[in-house]
Length: 327
Image (cartoon, rainbow, N blue to C red; front, side, top):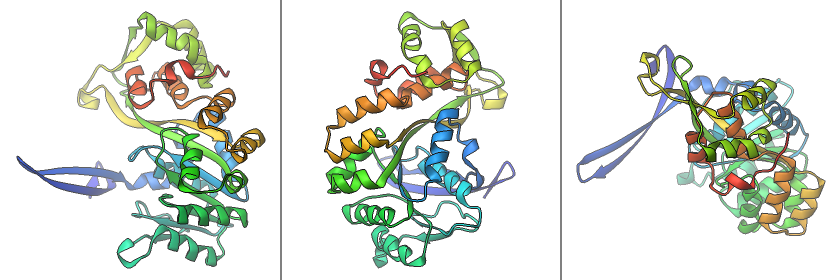
């Protein structure tokens, strides 16, 4: 259907309840499938790092996060950047959310035994340069993805984990050998969606002591732009807040954006994964190298794009004190 002059797909879920039928409709903006990475809201450092990763000739890049956190949009944006007519790009999806021009997209169908694993195995016989697998759900799919990356293919996929480093543990728990994982994985991106403030009506409010302390200790770790860093210094006790107007239906928010954690797998992390190092040690090392997902959220709060409450809502509590100070 068309909403506000734009083509929108609607995914509907129904469930019987004691008071009648319960219906949830998920709106999928078709234009999102035509976005490139410049529209994702990545910080300059994260954008450069992810751009570098997707232009590697081979390896696995994983995007992690809960259902509905924008993982598919991020993958589609990366594929759009790669789709310059010099690469053979194939995808296996369930379902195909957007049609991408110039990219071969395959619909997974478990009813006829067309699983992610079988789709991936078939696609590797199609001479691909880049392969996107909608989700790694089992050991068979994970092992085929690893072998594909080790034989000269760039593989993009998703996992459901809370942190970027958690993806390493999840694959090991599935049964992927550490020596294979360390040789194939080149980067992990964790993300969450937060609501963006209405640009027509949002205001500012004084932060309490705990909030001010949070920004003093962690805020600069967000790789903020110069403007945002100046705002942090000058307005350390001021935080953006929703107000509400006719432009945003009096909600104070309009649209959503993602907050990110981009973790490239460097030589040190590779050795740690190969040695089957504990997850908390991998996390500690990652925090010394890259800002956490909460730090990126704080950067967007500093810039007045979302609220502190939104960032705290979608990030883990322990991140309050564990984030590294990385300028």
